[in-house]
Length: 276
Ligand SMILES: NC(=O)c1ccc[n+]([C@@H]2O[C@H](COP(=O)([O-])OP(=O)(O)OC[C@H]3O[C@@H](n4cnc5c(N)ncnc54)[C@H](O)[C@@H]3O)[C@@H](O)[C@H]2O)c1
Image 1: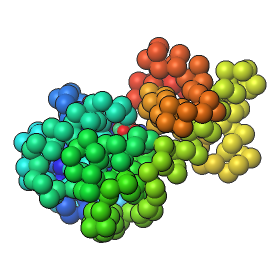
Image 2 (image 1 turned 90 degrees about the vertical axis):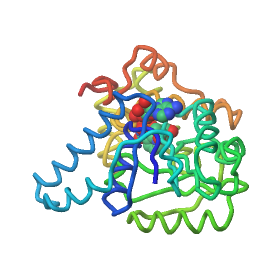
Image 3 (image 1 turned 45 degrees about the vertical axis):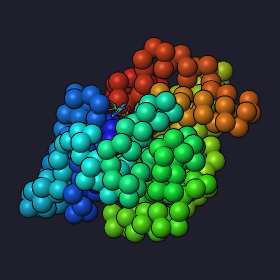
Image 4 (image 1 turned 30 degrees about the vertical axis):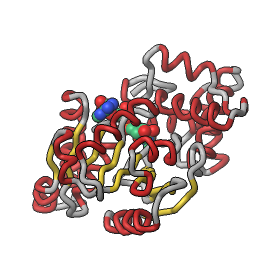
């Protein structure tokens, strides 16, 4: 299978699939990002050995299942998972290019957090063999995959994807195609409200996160979670919820826009609501 986009999510998906014994190719439009993605996988695998959770022999086997590639590798892929920027134009252009290179029978999946699967499916020219496979961050750790069924996704595509998700030992939950699906329709407005709360000076970032951890039993606070997701991704998701629902309750917090404008994107840039 082919994973396109070697960032936070693509590198996690490629790692997980390779660990499951499935031959996996990872590609990225940017060679530096591809290199960083492969290095991130290598260092996570090393950590598994260092902490005694996997043997060096296991890791050697995983490595043989993973390679770096290019668009030409779509020709051999029965499944392509896209994990590039959360914007509809580059995703559409990518799926059109993939459609020209991949066999007609191969299934295309998007890891999008919020963009319509039915729309992406139509523009890919294979709406029946198109669906959302929405993984969670960090991919090797969190058990869920939201399977998003577009209006035209076929029964065969759904059945094949359920089999795939079970093969990689994740738990699938099938949901409908609606902005943000289930997870991000609920999670992102909460994160956005935490940012409004910070912007309004109600409490400092550490206190806001502690309230949600100690009072609500959340494993991490919403601002630390925003930093983990990436503030650019959070803003893109809020923009999609806002425009697709046409409801101002989803307007992104101005502070979120300012942070993204300043290049403070969270963990991936070393600075977000907290420092890393
Ligand atoms: N970050 C999260 O917590 C999270 C969780 C679930 C889903 N997602 C979704 O996963 C997708 C990727 O998010 P991410 O956080 O991994 O982003 P990221 O910024 O870490 O990585 C994106 C990668 O895509 C590459 N890229 C951009 N355009 C490309 C193209 N046309 N062809 C090939 N590669 C291209 C970039 O070089 C970069 O390496 C988004 O749709 C996002 O909404 C993110």
